[in-house]
Length: 324
Image 1 (cartoon, helix red, strand yellow):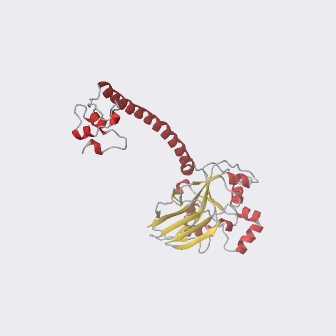
Image 2 (image 1 turned 90 degrees about the vertical axis):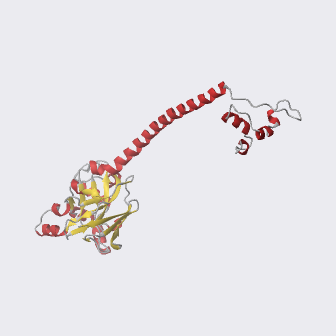
Image 3 (image 1 turned 30 degrees about the horizontal axis):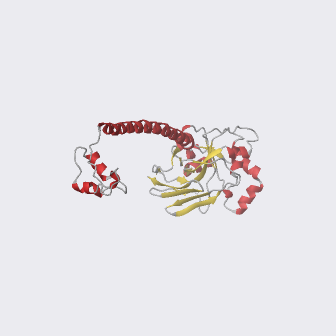
């Protein structure tokens, strides 16, 4: 291919030839294409200027540009990547650690409330009319720190047939709420929540029923290892009293739990205020807010089940499976 056939408009192919082959003469075809633009005399019959070899100074100039451009790019690109990558990692890693890992690294308490969803409008109205009494009668229990596991891990039933699922909205406390006899103001409680997640409160139902029969505690039924699978936290800037979520559970595509937080017997802001009558809530503490009882409510798990768990909006839908 001749050098005439390449290059953009206005490109001088002969100069390209000389740059590539400084020791060679131009081909006859290149000579024939040597235009009047290369002739300073301006005569009608231009005299051809013979090709010249590239000079030593030009070669050194090209070499200088190449060496210094590489050096410039190397130094400045490394500096740019170092500064900006460090800044990016620092900001995003800190944000990730604050939101996603604090619950696993700095948890002090995992508090839960029993039966906090109404099974009928009449039950809901009755509790809301006597809210203070309902709050005082709320059954609060805790889970152990070793109960926390990622919700996407398979649920090991360990050959048991009495493991029940209970899907719940989980709240992450990020500001200290001090204990006081009257509890913290509800607005302060809502402002202290900066993370929401979906969690499972796995329950050994036979053990729980046996404990209830003798007035015993629920720790063996509720706080055993891996009994609180939980998702990553979704960051929120506090909650509002009218904040609303829909919580649902599907077992193999069959809906077994689906209710809104508007069906809670004790609303979230009242629940948090009630907890602070007994406990100081510290950054990293987790509160599980109760499980839906409609259309079927909690039920037993069997090996091979596919669970589809959802908290909308924000958290989304996650799936997990059971194993023997």
